[in-house]
Length: 399
Image (tube, rainbow, N blue to C red; front, side, top):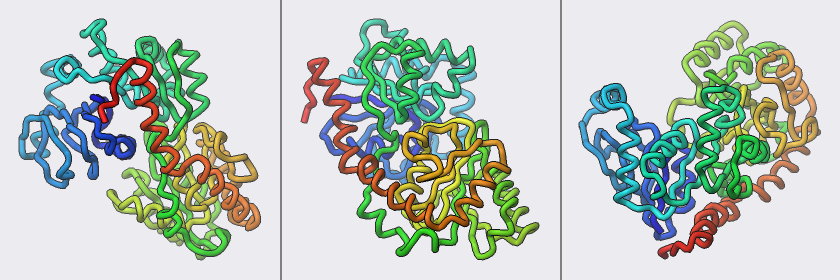
């Protein structure tokens, strides 16, 4: 089977998804939806179509590149920003040529605002000579962007022109229908794949979760991330945090500054994980955390939320994601408004004082993880998406 994936090549979600299908003997090729010249470390058994690249440093040997090398990330940085200005529509034309030359059996765009819009433009250029198209909804693709007229129309066009749809929230199945999707929607499944639960168990701190003294905060502060609200809420709980460590992963610059200020003004221990911290180390810290705190104005099922769930950390999560499809509010986690630090602080106080709540939640959430996040269950499901499409369209899987 020849499979063309249009997605962000520097994304861990892209790499983890492809890892699930990379051993099937298929010819898998990746067309970066954002042409930045960067490939996520560990991506393997796939051909990548970059316009520009700074070479193979740090890349898997099994990774194949189709690109022009500039041998300097600075040159790549300038090049990928100048080319769209000088040659509008260039990337859609490149995708059109790749499809015409590679002739994929299936095309799969992962994420809508970059990959979906780009794939739609290529389809318009190719007309009827287009393979079956799977669209995957990431995080806020419809739930957030669908509220804006300039995006709403484009989302409808993507869904109207696609044949298959995948997402990680039941909420987004309904939204796709509201936006005019008429094709086949596959069962919801995490976009980043599953977990090796046996390996993850080695990183869990033994004993009851109530004895743990770390709190993990997702550090995104941007168009939807609200880590600064989380820091303010933690500051409101300063009287309860003696002996606790606040650990922040994926911290943006303003969050790092605010975290240092919080530590200086309150004496609360704050540790910021360096960029590029290994996934195993992130899991290890979740495995010694009493609470997992994640706040955003919009999301799908946050990977950090799932990591905390697997590792036993008690979830305090904004209700604007679809965490309610995984936990029961006030029993196996607490759902909070993303921009109300007082409400978040109240939830944190509950999670800091109710030992029975966090211990029982850890047990129940692990059963959920075993049923819904085991990679041994999710990998065949990912492979099954493509084999189901191939069967419906009379395509040989080529193994």
